[in-house]
Amino acid sequence: MKKILLIEDNELNRDMLSRRLRKRGYEVVTAVDGETGIAMAQAEAPALILMDVTLPGIDGLEATRRLRAAPQTRHIPIVALTAHTMASDRDKALAVGCDDFDTKPIELPRLLGKIETLLNQGPRV
Image (cartoon, rainbow, N blue to C red):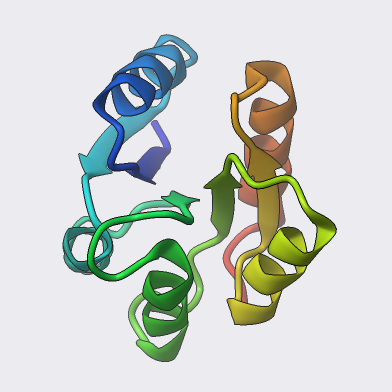
């Protein structure tokens, strides 16, 4: 069972997405802010991270920068999740090290496709 770390501060979004991913066979661990997400990524060693961009404290972009800088987490694929749909938002997420980008509200089939693609590619080098 592949483990996904979902870093999302909105309780409804976190609950809904966690349940839907578990129904599809993933193990899901969650964090509510960037700092906790970084610590959980190091402790849990997930196969993939779903990273909300707008988080309290350390935002998702800074959390991604820090995960990419750490040897034990730099290889984990990260998908940025945001309600912002501008091309510049996607570009910012990719520039800090996200592997992909998806918009809210989440369209589960589209997100699952991105998750499967990244998991099938294996870890980042």
